[in-house]
Image 1: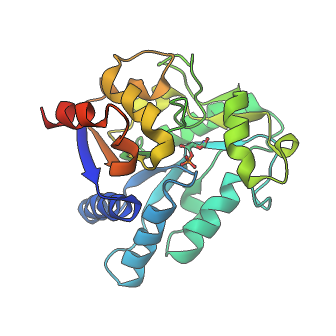
Image 2: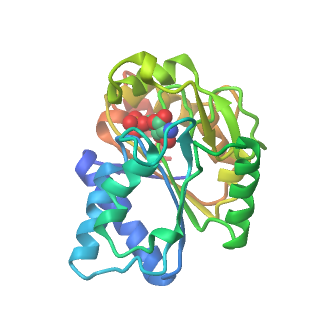
Image 3: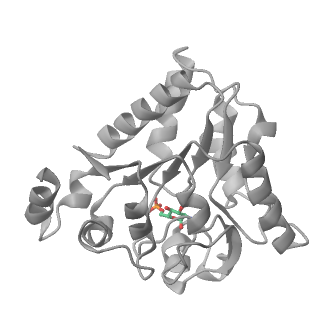
Length: 252
Ligand SMILES: N[C@@H]1[C@@H](O)[C@H](O)[C@@H](COP(=O)(O)O)O[C@@H]1O
């Protein structure tokens, strides 16, 4: 696990963007795994700027999102399809037919999960997966207790996750109770993983990530078993009480 410490959110977003741009230049038909949440928004803005400056093209890039709420269609402003269209896809030259997100309105959710896995395989697997992290260590919507070999699946959201995400909805009652998420096993099959962590609210998650052995109570710890991981973390997320120790730990 390589750790890149950024000064702040903007710096983290820029550094992660530079990493992805270099990968797209090496492989213009990169299969890119995408994440939602507030954390990657700055990264997406930087990618849009790189496209507008004619520095990169997404014409041949294929994307797979980690997850989607069950029950929300793509026109719902809280769906992850809507999020991705508005935060990234509408502003770059990507072929929308090559942007995949689980369908939260599918009649047969289990089929949808299987098909999603098959589609990822059909494109040769994910080259680079972007991840954010929930305060309880969730990645995608894999909540604590998710087995490390789990595949794309239908899951019930933890109440703490519904509460955290209720800031985007009119009320807590409007937050869906279920989602489809790539499994941890699916995520670990990506050839490379980029985890982005920003802000004071993530200090405890950072502490656990850097100090705990891989364990299913803290889903993000699974990435420690992966051979090619880059963690982009800003100083706010690092600066816990034990921040100094963490900085020392990282310096080793
Ligand atoms: N499913 C998403 C995760 O993929 C994301 O990492 C997490 C953290 O979001 P934020 O970046 O807003 O803290 O939120 C959601 O639950």
